[in-house]
Structure formats: C-alpha cells, structure tokens
Image: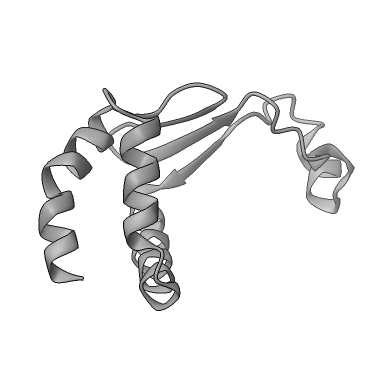
Length: 101
C-alpha cells in the first residue's frame, strides 16, 4: 500500500513502512554505523516496524496540534498525494479531524 509516490516513496507491507528517497543519499556510508553496514553489501532503503511508525505519527501529530499546523498538513497531503491509499483514508477522515480541532 503506497502512501506517497514520486521522489519520496513511502509504502507499507504487513509489518513495515518502507522509505525510499530518490535524492536521499545522506552519507550513511561515512558514519560509524555505515562503516560496518557497507561491508554487508545489503544496505539500502529504510524499513521501520509499523508499531514504531504509529508511535512516531501520534507524537508528530501532537506537535502539529501544539504548533497549529494540522490543517495545513492535511491540505498539503491531500493536494500532493491524491490517489494513494493513505491519502484516500485522510480524505475520508479529514472533515472529522477538522471538526475535533
């Protein structure tokens, strides 16, 4: 299930969120972690357990609430990611979220 497609591609399987970024090279291979990982030849994109992502999402949502940025984030997501599964859910739930705000 894709959430975002394009230069930043986020999709999930049964248990993980996968993050691929077309221009996302951040010199990981120069880090202390990268010194060990590059020897395996398998370092690639990132996949995070969905439970970890769920925890991050609710913490980030709380920050957006404090900053007053929820409505702007909803508008950007709906404008940029229409047609993706996660955006369809947001489009359906956005009016209820905005009512609660």
